[in-house]
Length: 273
Length: 336
Image (tube, rainbow over the protein chains, first blue to last red):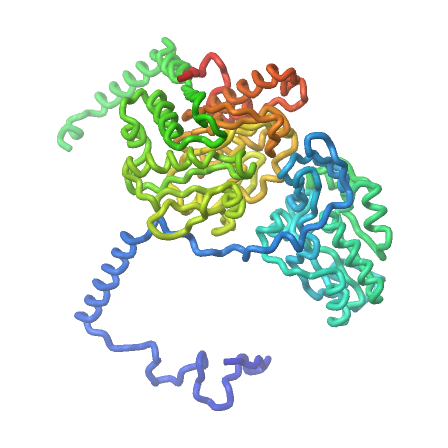
């Protein structure tokens, strides 16, 4: 039952005055939870409960499969596109050229970010249109000032990150592989349409690390540009120069972590930006 | 009670002082040190069982010969005559036994199906119920591509990936590791048999027993820098892994000496062997030497020369980890 809050009276009971579910009981009236229980009934109940608990303990199946708590199986194929920044090596290995880590990745292995996989010598991004978080936020939350103040940003993220910050508040998506978090299919044009639908003049790529979904980010930014929606990226900027220029060339504004603290808290040794 | 009352304060102090003196003297005389040294000098046993005719005249492993090879390896390892009795030494009815296989390499280069079937057969003969055996790895699809039949119910051997049950929400940490563990490991299995594959690895050098544990955590991609060192050793220190691990049976029927961990037929060979040990470090060291010998035979540089020696094996054996030994003098390799 809904309640209204009044500063003078505290929680208001609905007008019918019956107390309602959760409303205050009238003094002297028996509470629905109170009951008369003699000693014999109490002992019977206690013994029965004890026995039931004991049986449960013995019957507790060690073999029981834990209930499924993880994300639904996702169709990988529609989220998979060939990565833009990598170099092919011998023996079906590749070298990722997206960020300064330059992961050398063997066949069937993934890079440090966990969202790019080498499949037979071709490197794929597994997070294209694979949005695991999307919210409409005030732009100041990004945080940005003096840029469209008081407006909203359609904010989104995919799983994965190329650093490992000790303070990360979104570690459950940034430090996860894409298949480990629930996600929706949201192609670039749909993002632009959603931003307009929710009256957001800006799309913000944030929460995890936009660098690792660069291919998606570039296309979504283009789609947004065509629809008259700006783009903002909240990023660590830990990216190779060529990739940085290609991916962020058309960005309205960008922020990155301060150089002073990056080594101490992110475990990275080089910032190319 | 009365005896205690009869001990006077003087007697009590005398006994304490005498005890302390004896302990001090024995320490001086090196008795304790000798005992420690004796334990340290105990050799880790690694059994390598081979069967040149494991595949007969074809390319597929023969199930009967595999069972016989497994029996030979186990009987040699446990010095037993009866194959089933050797399994009874390790596992008790009522325990849930997890077989952590490696399905990353796809069909032909993952933990051998016939080997897993043979292990399951012997476990059941040793009194473990079929549905108390769980064959598992990260992903059910990978298991199916390898040839396993995913099964999560009934009175059959269970087989599924962590994707079916998810990882624990809580992070577990040790040293450089901070990860979520598979619920199959934490909630389903009492004990583990590690069933890795003998493979070359482009980053770590080799991937055998210790590195197979990357399949029990949610974020193995974070632990590949620096040749996976010290990450592999730190991961194997987690109590959930260390206390449950009973045995490693390495599938060395098909092995690779270059281009791993993916399957490259040109860099693989039919080794037709199983490697069994309690000591994952000794097993990894022995496997590494097998791969090095094959590389030398093929005219390739050593892994050290290739800039990817598996230094994590030494880390796993160091004073901070003590997961086993990598000292060849303390490894007894028995070939049968």
